[in-house]
Image 1 (cartoon, rainbow, N blue to C red):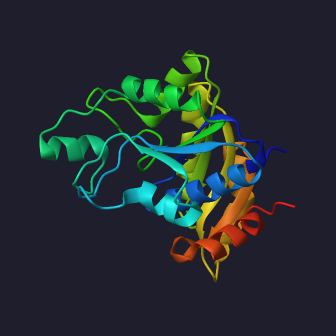
Image 2 (image 1 turned 45 degrees about the vertical axis):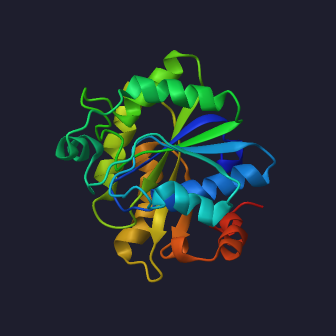
Length: 235
């Protein structure tokens, strides 16, 4: 069974929604890749809800993993909306997803693994032409660049339907779903959360890689890095 240590080329990190813990999972995956001795870069195609001097998600990833981690933020928007809506609100034109795919391809030429953190779910529009994270991945594969997906799932009710739809959309684009990570596992999980651990692999056809405890993003860097192997059950 594949696990985070097997990651190569480009990996898209998407979620079953907004606020499910994609940034923390991206940081944890970056730590796993770096600890195995591979070079890693992290890319955010579209960051919304941030001002000119805010650290944003890439700043949070560096805080958790290391200030020397290579990160790239391709588009930054002020309003806390989906990228297309935020751009419309600000009266700006977003770069097409094809341009982002070219940039990610360039970054992949100098890094063994590139983690691309999406905005919200797989089919959230990243440009005014309707381009999505899934389209970015399909464009990379068309260029001959290996690309897979990690799905960050919410722990509770409602996640199975979105997870299944995400898996179907990936299959339609010939993009492999490498694994599922529960992005914010509660300290006192209920029946729905416990059942999701069994049902997420069933409805997605992908292995459950691990559970990140809620509040992990607030940990000091040293504690975060020390805890990552246990969250993924890496021996």
